[in-house]
Length: 116
Length: 109
Image (cartoon, rainbow over all chains, first blue to last red; front, side):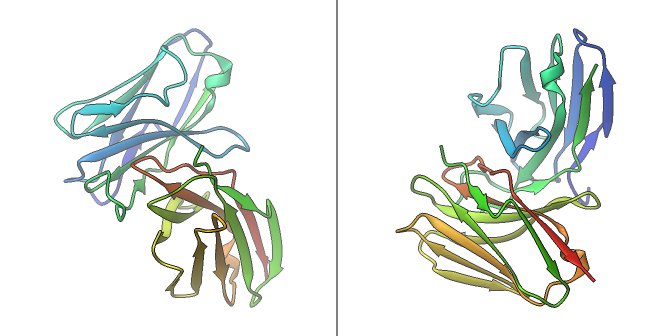
């Protein structure tokens, strides 16, 4: 596609429910990233995929968060037993190669998650 | 932490004026990138400056980097109302971009 797409654009859920957020990267991009932006905060790095593997999961805030990427393309970020502090905009980005000093990350429009 | 810290937090200017935003970071970097975020277009990459570069231009944007002071600046010349947005610097030292809270720029006609 022309850019990174994410779905849903908005998600409202009740505390304790599980949610799945989807990211479709730019075709041909091998690297994929998830970030989280809370109200009034900067963007917090969550996880990075190179192909289907995730060399760095250190940014995931708790074991309720997990992510996978299949076929070197689509990625899903899953949050189990959601808490109110999980409310944020979840942004996905992709880049051509990853780990390069000149690699530009292209961001999707984000999924706004609200946990009631 | 590589997290960039932008200064000022908010900036209000009139169309035609120049806007300068500053960024500081803590440790060594490969490059530093600037992004813009507004409600209409999401997060957009503006410019990348490598650690061995001191200045870079792109259209009305001018970025400087001083690795000895661990600081960078973004200058927007002849600002327009459409430049109204939040601007983030992101020190890059591997693969993750470490954004700060950004500078909120308001350009009034």
